Length: 456
Image (cartoon, rainbow, N blue to C red):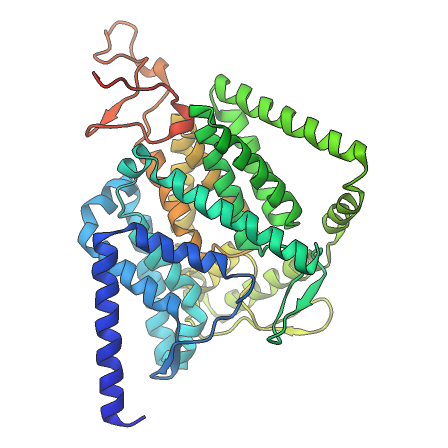
């Protein structure tokens, strides 16, 4: 490419990028809409082609979107600090260590190698920063998130039905060769899509709890079925643990609703099983649950990578290895693996060190504890599911708006611990009514179903 062509290309790219920034600044929902489109394409296009090759690295659509989102986050610093509350320091620590690993890796291994290996970290950091700067309190009040979950959930149900009809329902060990020559999973959805299904299920279920909407109830039930049929054991485990935690720490009325929903779903499942129409599906589910080959391969690689980090010196243990260092290890079958390990905590330790891992644990841990104290049910469910899912996969950047909503819902939900109020002090607010924050009611809908009248 000649110098003039390069200048023209960069000028056009900068103009389009600036337009994207301005459009998202005017309509933030478009940023989430782009992310939803990415989620829809994960099965068909696991490796999307790059837009261009610049300065030794490939530029992808996801990179353009993430930088445009981050540019908008800079203008909403006050909302970002408000959503994170007292946890802004751990988040800044993660961003600083990620940037340090990039700069060091670019110096040692080259900019292309550093960006290629660190892309999963950069995309998550940039997109999460933007999502945390959104006015989630207003969006929850207007039902905006419910409509997003409804749209995404319906699309994923249709996508799963299409894959099942055309290719059949595969297990964890099956694969499909597409016409374009790509090899994709034989399951109806990839893991990231299946986890999105679980998040949409939780949000629509909470909407049903508040409104008894038939649409929300049917949608949450259908999403639960799709999550099961998708046959991702990590997603099953994440949903089961999150639901168990919610049942343990939620108010009594939520426990009753959850148990009632489980009884209804269990009754329907038994009725279907008695008809015999789902015998083949049950066989597939049991087969997927019993397959441990991939689990053994992942678990065997984690100690190797951690030992390599300790062998390189204390500075790599504390601050992490630079991006571009690689993830070379030997799997149990004797093959050499170089891809990013399927464990977010291991990956985080390898590239941001013990400091980065500690910052993540403090950030998520503090909000999980706060969610339990304030009984912020939706936030507790989503953060717990992400934390468990991260044991078998890395945290996917396209789940940024779910994670940000969970954090914001916890930050602005009021405490349910009435015992902390002294019995000798007359409370100045009516404890039976939801707390209002800047004119916006409590944004964790499932834990506070009480409606606010227009006079309040």
